[in-house]
Length: 310
Image 1 (tube, rainbow, N blue to C red):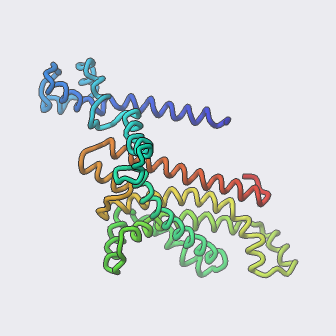
Image 2: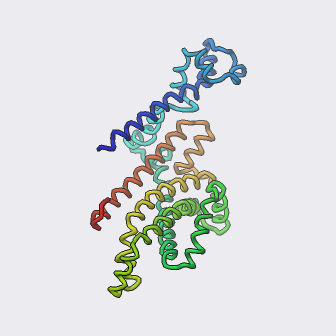
């Protein structure tokens, strides 16, 4: 609860800045609209207003600034408009029994979530296996870690179409597999780095103590290295699940998919409906927050059971 006030303060500041940004972002569209309705605008004509700064337009047409807060297709919608659109495509549809309609963000969120979880599972598995190899093998450390770092320099936007094309040439049907691969690509690196740090967390004296007990390498791993890596693992998983969701959404953009949050963003952009874009973005943010919160609760329970402080 002591963290609630700072969080709400930051949220309030962001909302205020958002509302203030709506006026300059929408003033040109608002003036075009009221001018078509017969109102007097200074200067007249959209061409003449093109080179005039938004601040001057707002000062000269202060009576029409409020119109920018009620546009059907604003350049920047208000938080209230986004909230209304989000509710209309989630809660309202669920109350009508249409939660799984193709116009519902619940349906599209579920499509995105499936690929996210598959990619998260794959990326986490590869990250943990790679971390164990790096910790226990000098050769693996010298060979795998540089390539893991280099792989993160490749823009995912450029890599996603390549993965989709290769998957298609290999005869992999469906769009779920390429999205999961892209999701795993973004997910495995934070897990790899976190697990390497965690597996190396035990001090030399602790490892030497186990050697005096004649513990095998597997026993040292299970009794010392693995428990010590759990806090690092969960921290990495929370970063990885968010990255996996981003990877899935990016993977939906070049595939021509018609389902998923990424597809809703793309369709909203193609048809010029900013509210659809913003509501899908907020739905993705809410989904990411839920996944991270679930992992955080799991971390607390796991560490408490292990006798550690969360």
